[in-house]
Length: 511
Ligand code: GLU
Image 1: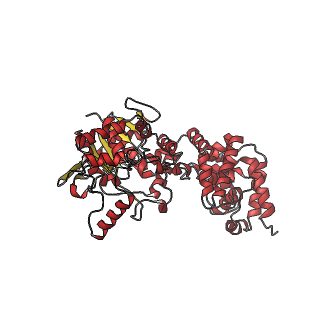
Image 2: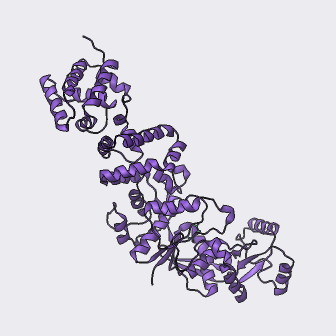
Image 3: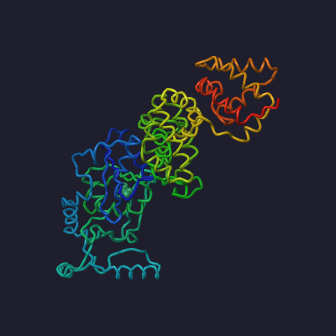
């Protein structure tokens, strides 16, 4: 069988990671089997339509490198791929007529009040909730015609067969069965003539020759209706694959409470697509063995449905952050510079940080980084290369590189009072000043030699009393990249200025 899968989002907002994880699984599965991945837009519920979400859907997929061979924006033999356009072409009207003619579907003219009353009755009497036929399922042709002629608003429903066991064989969960008497008759066409999700989605899955319906677990309860629809048409059912839901580390369903859940927010927060793809692929799927760090190509090679788990996957932010750091360190410096520039340039990034608590600090750091890269690209490349070893996200570079960019670094007061008040510090800094004044550039080795020699000449047993005051003078902080490396990057001119500032503002000369 040739593999044809579809990602069929409804444009109801920017897609969440769970939804995109399912889209990734479909892509990996299609690629693994040389199949076709299709993107279809299910926009028949106009009340839930959110402008801009289609673009967010495509941007999310493209950001992660999830490709599709057929569908929206690329076309294909089964187009159009937007359901509202398919509706205009009369595709759903035609197929619902087939079901009406064969007696598998029926018109129902219940008023909203009648439906509410029915539901309340079912609740009070502890009956299964839903529409199980009412007065219309078996109504005569004449009464239906009369209602239609009178212009009474009506819907078309599917006749779920009575007294049957509905069975689907889910690839992940195995056999699932339902008592058909507890499955209500779903609406296929609404009173305004629009098809419902159930109907449009299944008709399209058939017409587009979908082999596997891969989707989230939340759709399992719809599966018996979908199976019955296929059966009513006499069509061969696709294979059902319901992927596990994603939970937060606390065990509850992933939601806003756990932080970002929209796929594109992770881009704005500074995550790399490589890390994101690798990380989400392992939520609910395992490649076997203890493999963890995998590229898209490796995932395609390894992916198959038998690695999918029925139990919920866990979204572990710490793991994503760790993976992102790993992928940042893997990058060549030119690729990394390119990614950082793109990242800051994206208007989503700044908007995202503006929305965060204290986000203005981050916005300022990032803008400063952008300007510095623009005005002194070689210098900033060296600074970024040093911080590449230490940061976890692209957004961290602003803060990490700050001391390279400012004239006077922000001084950590505790560090200043602990180290710069020591008696030997004025001597140390003046000696370094004298040494630097002779130089235009300075290598790491020269910095290291000078520090070691100074410590020896002044009978200091350890390097700490030399290293710490110099680091604080140059960076304002006690932690950061290797001192000799950062000194070499800063270079004599900047270091001289910093030493002068510290001698003037922070060092109390006692003699
Ligand atoms: N349009 C549905 C959604 O928004 C698709 C569900 C399915 O894959 O069947 O997720």
